[in-house]
Picture (cartoon, rainbow, N blue to C red):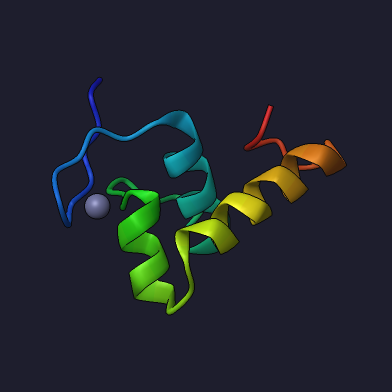
Length: 65
Ligand SMILES: [Zn+2]
């Protein structure tokens, strides 16, 4: 199933979906891409990428494998 950002329509990657679930709603059915999520949260895409790296490096979050 193809997923697109509900804001800009960009095709979403697994990381986009994972971080949205982690930061916004674990059970979300609609997602934002990293750029739109950053804008919504008032941070930068870079901040979000760092978070993804962090969650992945801990190995504890099942959303990031
Ligand atoms: Zn977007």
